[in-house]
Each structure stands twice: as structure tokens, then as C-alpha cells.
Image (cartoon, rainbow, N blue to C red; front, side, top):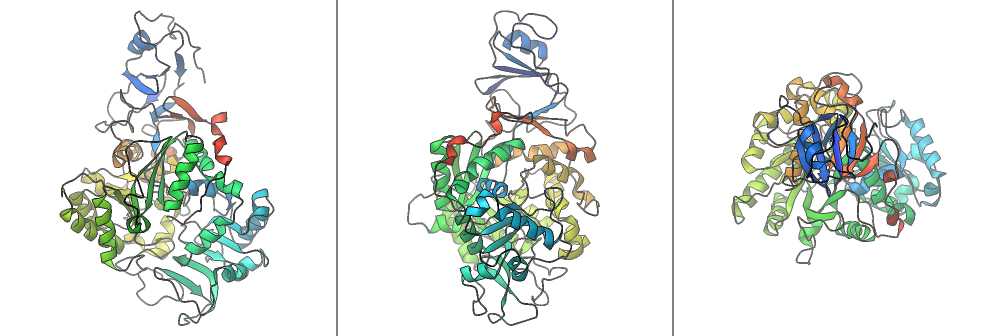
Length: 602
């Protein structure tokens, strides 16, 4: 790493002039990207950054840094040509889900796994069942299969999963976390039979053929609210030690991708308590911002079940609530205004998906209640029909609220199929779009050929429309739907290149590397009302930093994907090193029992 030993000289041999203030760390010798809100790619880059007591105290000239800040105990860090950026901020994800992702059988396709067909999916589930966690789990569980990437081009069925086990229930979770498939034993555990009606906002898929519900025999595939009980029951059956380690594993995984602030988005009140209980045992090494489920929080008899605050307690703060208004475009459950290009089997002509909450008054009442309690509102809205529903609720609730012009920073999560008129509405209403930009890579080909068709697919995650309006937008990984891969977030926005066919999906929606960096640094800090203390390398801000193998602003766009996270630094302290330090280990105290149960996300 070529770090200079702490001492009284810099690499020119000169001694610092007295008097000086002694920094804890001084970085130099690399490309420093401040990501300040008003920064431009053409701006000259600082030569050095000094940190004292977890706060940035100098950004600028190297000689000045040495003269004023380098003392006998200062650790001098030569970046050796690598890049220093602000620590990445997770605009939307699920911390417990990241830990769950690291715990279950990996059913992901390339490049995050190696499942290619039903047979390899079955093998992964069988192998996991023999692991220490799997052997003591009540269910056999895997996460991350994608029917678009399986050779058969379909979901696994109850018969496919019966081949894994007939004595234990089996659950294979779709990568979207909006669908899953269970075996026959799993259907029995859930009480799903041919007489079971579809729940509101969900579908129990039936055996092939247009059989009128509720009389078709379930084929094992479950959507949305029909899937949620399976994920809840299956994950609740994991060994207690595995549940207790979820947050620690999630922190370690997120830190390995350069994140210094993460989100637990859409927690049940029970899981919000579990998060706080975990932090009470051992403070988190990175910051966690939590949002409770809006339906549960707004219906709670407690006067303030969320306890939202701008202050972190042992690394955790609650900020507001998250609403769920539709499903997954890649799973073809998102609510659209125009029909899907190819509808799922058994659905009617003109199928457009469906809302999670059909009654718009319920949606409006949730936004009203949140605004009245000063809870920040996030809403899962993938389809443009769901976005319409949300925009109308925000427009009405904001006009009624006092004061009407309050800075609420309401967030449209995913906004995957947002139309240009809806981006304009976001701008008028002060709604921040947070795009799941990695869809362009993971499912771009699926959107073109199956979900939307080429024209509509070209404008998914339409960040350029936001940039052109000088709006603040953010981008996220939505883990566990995808790995919490910061570099993939950057690459997918700049190149929009698809995974299989390697086409550029809507080149007119590509953004600059600096725009992409800001979407997970200073703009994400703004989304959290934390722009004064996080998100950029500026004097007075927290020393939340990440060292990358190369600068995403200067490498060719197609090489951004090859950048690696070398080190993650929280308040001046290393919390992850690619060289392998104890900072990579899960939080040790989190092995104590906590009451946590995963509830589907994303």
C-alpha cells in the first residue's frame, strides 16, 4: 500500500513547519473525487485530504496539508494512484435481506452465481440442505433464481421442488423477491389448496390451462401477497443463530462494496425493534437508516411507533415509512397503464399487472398520516400506473398538510417505468426519484423481448430526464434483489449495457460518471437530509470514505464495471479492506438472540 510510517516528514523529506495541528490520517498520491454538490468533471482535483477525530479537516494542497496537519502520530496514506471518494450511501436496500442473501442457497445466475437451469437450481438447494444452517432449518430455502436466465425460461414448479425434498418444505425465492415457488409440502404448510382464493394484491398460480380461480390446483408459484406468507414462514424457521447474524452479515457485505450508510427499507415494527435491539448489543460499524412499513405504522395505536429522528443511536436511526403500491416488472406483477408485451400464462388479454392497494383512499390516508407525523415517505412504485396513484396521493396530501411547502423529500422508489410527464410531476412536487438502475443490466434484454418491448424498455430508469431538469435523483441496489454492488450501480447508469445481448438500452438515458457518483454520494445524503455531514469530501463533513482501484470519472465508461473496492472507511476508521482485515468479520455481538423475521421487500 506504500503507506508512509507515521512521523515528521513527508515524501519530499521536509519537516512540517510549527505550529501544526496533528491529523490522524493524511491521504495523498491518488485521484480525489470530492463529489461536492456543485462539482464538475472539469474541476481541478485536490492533492490531499486530512482527517482528525473522524472529521475531514483539510481538502486541497498537499504541501499545506503537510505543513499544517502532519505530526509525529499522523498516519500518512499514499493512495498509489488509486481513487478516494466519499463513502457510498445506499439510497434503498434491505440490510436484513443482505444478510439473508448471504445465508441462503445462492440461486443467482452469472455473474453473481452459477445457476443456469432447473437442475442446477435443484442441486444448489440439495447442497444447502446439508450445510449446518440448512440441516437445522425447518425449510430448505434458496434465493435469487431468475426465470429469464433459466434454460427452461420458466419458474420452477411444485414438482421440480418435490425432487429436492418431499419431507421438508422447500422455497425457491425469485430474484425480485416478489415471487417464489414452493414444493407440495410447502403448499400444505401454507394451507394453499385448489379451494384457496387469491389474496388481495397477490396470485396463487394454478396448473396449466385457463382454469377459473379459485378451483385450479396450485402449481407452486406464488406472487406478491400470496408469496409473503411463504417467505415469512420459511425464514422464521431458520436457526436462531442464523437469524441473529443477519444484520452483521449485511453490514459486512455492504461495507465490502464501499457503503458507509445503508438502509433497512420497509421493516415491520417487530423488525425495527430487532434492529434497535441488535444495535444496543453492539453498535453498527456503518450507519443504518430504517423505514417502517407504512400500512403497519399508520394503523398502529401507538402515538409514534416509528420514533423518527435525525440522530443515530449506536449506528441506527428511523427516518419514516415505506409504502408498497405494486410489484415487480421483471416478474410481470408491476402495475402498468399499458399491457405487458407477453402476459404470464393464465392471465387475461390486455393484462397490465395489478396494484398492491387498489383503493386510492387507503394510499392517500397513509401519506396523510405520515405527513402529519413528519415521517419521510418512501413508496415502492415500479409501474407507471402505480406512479400515477402515488403522485395523486402526494399532490393531495401535500396541499392539505401544514405547511404545504414543507421540505419533505418524499421518494419514489424504483420508478422503473416512469413516463417523462411523471418525472416532470416529481419535479413540481419535490419527489425524489430513486432508480433501480441495475435493471438496465440484469433485465434489460428481458424487458425488450418479453416485458415491455423495445420502445418502452429504452426508457426504464430514466435518469437523464431527471438530469435534464436539474433534479436530484438517487440510484440504489435494492439488495437482496441484487448484490449491494456499488460499482454495478455506477456502470449501469453510464453504459446501460444489457447482460446477455450486450446492447445499450436507451443510450439517450445514459448519464455522466459524475452524475452516477453523485447519485450514491451527495444526492443520497440529500435524500436522507444528511447532506451537511455526509456525501462529499469537504471540510467539516464526516470522514466516510472509500478507496477504489481506479477513478470512475477518468476510466473509459466500459471499464467502470472492472473497478474494485479496496477499502471502506467510516469516520476515519477502516471497516473493510480488500487485503482482508478483521473489519470484514460480522459484528461479533450480534450472535446474541434477537427477535427478527424477514418480511419480503423489494
